[in-house]
Length: 304
Image 1 (cartoon, rainbow, N blue to C red):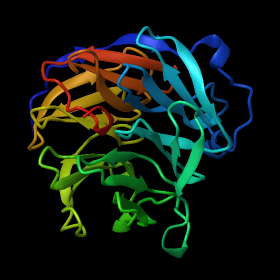
Image 2: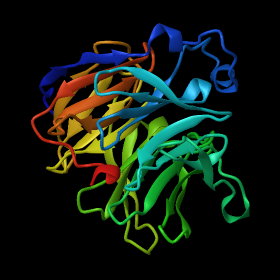
Image 3: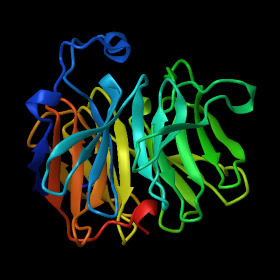
Image 4: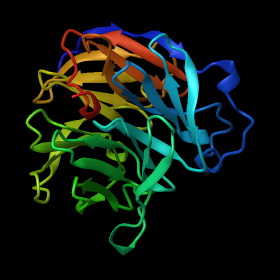
């Protein structure tokens, strides 16, 4: 359909140090995944105002804090399965946890607070990823074990008032998500259909008619984390394919960004002094990759 876009190569910014790799530690998530022991599984990169990069370790219930120089520390460790992470304007870390629901962590003490864990008189299926709108609305995915024969994955919106809206409830594995530049549509990576779906949204209202936006090809997985740049271009991680795509606002492929490490790229965040560097978590080898791009990323809610 399109000619192959230009190829960009990544480099390794930093990797999980040996003392923080725990391949022999038992984990319910690792056992359920059924692919053998894991030293870590990185997801959810997000920067604070000091340039520190936070990310989660899904496999072992940890949140890492990485300095601008690439030095690692365990910010928090708890009984849970953290998956996505974004920072609020007030500095709090919001985390979607597959076991415990929507959580927040104090940036100074790492004290954990349960924000929502039992919506509408029933539990979440298993939360995955999240994104803030500029007005403070928080959108997050709830795929659980949904699949092509269990179309029960959900997308939620939590308003600053505390009101919780169920926007979608019939998706096959909703995963990463990002708002378009106008913030009138939510782009959701539906991993198990290898596609990105466009969901019209309006503040204070429900979702409009959802439709297919981008269909990917290849990989044993599908789209995972996403991000947006100042031109409205969309970054889409192609998990299991060792690739991150950059698409125009109308879905034309602009660049293919290839992992120089393993194939299991998971999520992305723009960083650097001019926000022109894209940082990519790669879970197979436990590394943070980076690549320079021509257009700056949109500031995350926590930095805006």
